[in-house]
Image (cartoon, rainbow over all chains, first blue to last red; front, side, top):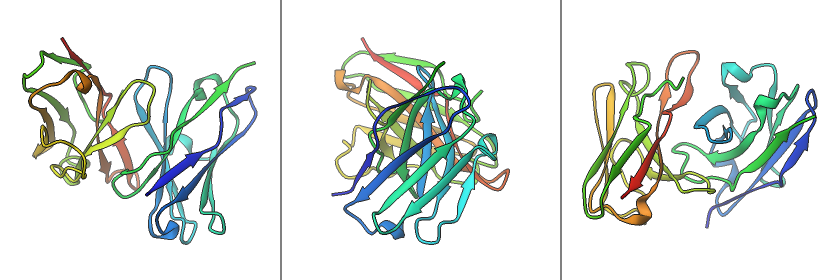
Length: 115
Length: 111
């Protein structure tokens, strides 16, 4: 069965970076793009970008351009999302979700940004 | 401010039929598929409807989706207490080199 297992919660100081991982299993990793979506406390869903695990190409939401980097490791079927220059507004649960239909989601990773 | 517009709340009694609307534009709903996600408290979103009106296996046929022009709607018939959740619509948007957009979410309360 398809599973996306994300790394654990993180607490970061403003200005720092965070790297969240998402390990895929149960399907051919390189056959499906992967989205990253975040959700601030009590708020809605916000799309951050997408990565092609096959070639590594990426497309980021304009809001995060220059601050987000999505990478992958095909040897471990894992995608990564790194967000830099963190500020308090980046406190959120970060999800990976399989494309095309966002049919499977990771369990979410809470990132707290606090001084 | 979400690109897709949903009512912030909806409610119904058990057994009733409720609908949730989602309004967009020609660059998103008007030209691409609409998706619906259900999010129970403290959990990740779950795909409920894909490609306008398709249900993944395991989703009851009480849930149905439709699209017309630049709007879409989710209908839930035979409302049950376990349907109480947040519902989000989503679509690909062709503007700005393409990006995924979500509605602001609708909190469904079963009275």
